[in-house]
Image (cartoon, rainbow, N blue to C red):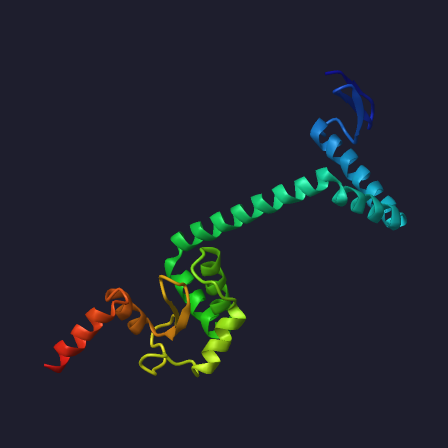
Length: 199
């Protein structure tokens, strides 16, 4: 690397280019950064003066195959990074995570219910939309169809369906839904249980 020194003007050659440096004590990196700063300022000035061209170029890139592919990869990467960060934070701060969840549940109960419902739809558990689920809740006055009581747990009413046909029978509270599941929807077993309780 060559160096040429003058009274208050030093030039240093890096990778075949000459960069202006203010004094002998300045490093090549500082000179490179000052050039980079001037270039970015010039680019910003040009972009302000030619807004239409910038927008056209941006749209052209976004609509191209390369732009679509890049945007898709960026979205996937950022979603994964965000989820990893959230999971790590929850592990490090379990008490805060629980506190924030409780606050969110009180402020936005419908949003949380819809989010949980959509995640179960993604798993293929439910075959109805969230709007249809809300209509069923209104018809039942937000009460269990079996015991007629509201769900005491923080969970929303469970969707009870026939496991053979897939027909939705109604919405049940957690206890009733678990109870029917334990008896495997077997009418004979349930009749035996009734006789047993009557004796």
